[in-house]
Length: 551
Image (cartoon, rainbow, N blue to C red; front, side):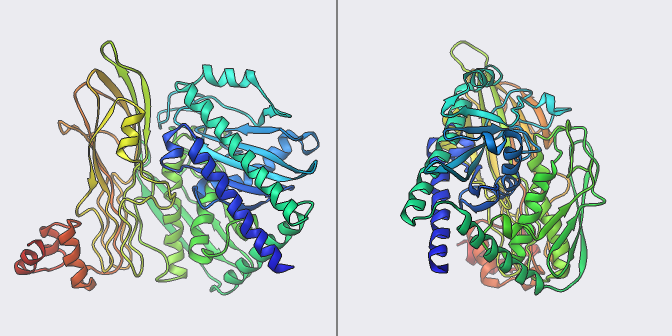
C-alpha cells in the first residue's frame, strides 16, 4: 500500500510541475514566461496543500498554502461545481500584493469534488499608480479583485473581464495571463482525474492522509533533534524614507519552532509593507531550508513552523496599508531568521545576500509620432551570500528563486535598450568563501521615447553583511548616465537621451579572507571576479602572482 502511495505522491508532483510549465508556456507577461515568477500546487478537498511545482517561488507557493481555505470560505464549498474557476488578487488572502493574480479551480472526478488546483502569477500591470513604492494606501496601487468566480460552471464572467480591461494599461497581456492561469489548472485537473482512474481511487483522501502523516513525522523528527534553545536576529535595511529594523526570535521546542517578529519596525507610509501571509511564507522557507530542506513542501511539513508578528508592524501590515513592494522587505526576512539560526546551528546558514530581487519597471511614452506606450518590467539579481563550505552564487535570486530575464526578452517587450549587463567585479564580500557577485546594467529608451523609472531596490545604505569573519558585499548604486544619484525606491522621470546606470549588490563572505584557498583567489582574478587591487590588498597576493594569473 505504501509503495502505491509513494508512486501516487510522485505522480502528483509531476502533475503540478506540468501545471506550472503549462503556465510558463501560455502566459503573456515576461515576469511569468521568462522569470518564472509563479507557483502551482494541488490541494485536497479541505484545502490543504499536498504538492507544489518545482518551478515557482516560495513566497507564492507558501502563501498559497494559506489561500485556498479563504476561497473555500468565501465561495462556499456547497456551491462549487464542475467548470468553476475562482480568482483574487487580495494581498491578505492571496500572496501579498495586487500584482499577483491567484486562480483556484475545484477538481472533480466522476462528478465528485476531490480537491483543488491553485496557481499564482505576477502580472506586469494592475492599474493604479503602477508597480512601485509610491502609493500611500492599497487604493492607489491598482485594481482590487475580491475572491469571486471568474467562471461559473464553465461560463466566464464577461463583466469582470471588461472591468479588468478598462482599469489596466496592458489589458491584452493581463487577460491573457488570467486565461493562462485558468488553463494550467484545467490541465492539472485532467491529469489528476487520469491518475485517480488509473489507480482506481475515488478521491484524494487516502493519498492526502499518507502525504500529511509522512511529511509531518519527518519534520517533527528533524525538530526533535535540535537543541532546545532560542536566539534573536536583527537586520537594518534601507526602507523607503527611513531605515527599517527587522527583528526576530527563533525558539526551538520539542514539536515546533516558533519565530516571532516582535521589535520589528512599524508600518511604513509607503508601499513596502508586508502582509503576514507573505512574512510567514519566507520565514517558513528559511526555517525549512536550514532544518528540513529535503522534506517535500506541503501543508503538513510547514505546520510545525509557527510565525507571529505584532499587528501593525511592517511585517504584519493591515488593510489598507500600501503593499506593492512587499517583496523588497519580504525577501530579506530569511537573512533575519538566519541571523538567529546561526546561533542555534553554527556553520549551517549562509552569510547575508542581496536578498530582494533587483527589479525595476519602465513606463515608456513616445515623444514623437510613431512611438508607443509600454510598461516593461525586468527581474534581475544581486549575489547570494557565501555558504559555510562554498562561495555564494553570482547574480542569483535567493530566496525567491526567480530567474533573471534575458536582455532579448526585455527589449522585445517595449522600446527599451539594455546597453550593458555583466557581472560586477569586487561586489562579492571577501572571505574564506567569497560572496556571490552582483551585476551592472545600463538601461535606456529607444529614440523618440522618454520614460519613468520605478526603482525597487534595497542594500543601498545597508549592504549584505558577512558571517564568521567574512566581509560585506558591495552596496546597490543607482545613477543617471551623467552621474546624478537616483533613489533606491520610488519613481524617477528620466530625461530623453539619458540612461539609468545600475550596480546591483553582492553577497557577504563567509570566514576570514586570510583562510581563502590560494587557487580560488587566482581563479577569481583570472575570471575577472576580483580586481588586482582586491587580490593584493585583501587577499595578500604578490605582484608576481597577480601577473601570472592575468597573463
